[in-house]
Length: 52
Image (cartoon, rainbow, N blue to C red; front, side, top):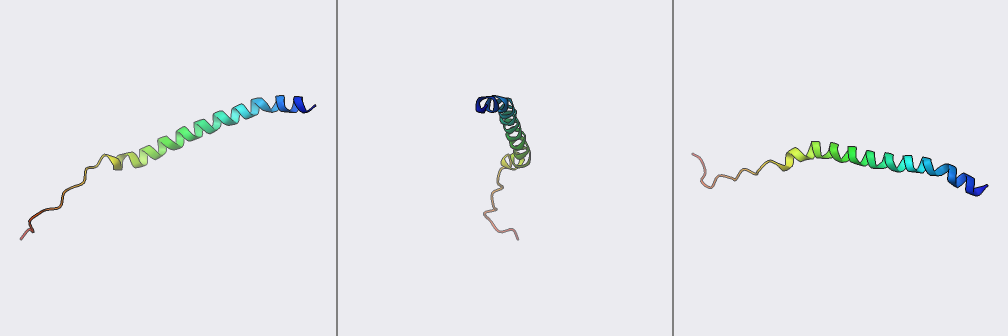
């Protein structure tokens, strides 16, 4: 009986693992879309002479 329960749960666990990978991929893409733009900006150097 215990073997039947374990075998019945295996397809469900495989679906959950695939769901976790997909969720991780989507969250990473969303993070890169938000933060990735900020990484491309170059800092502007401060002026060395005060402007009068």
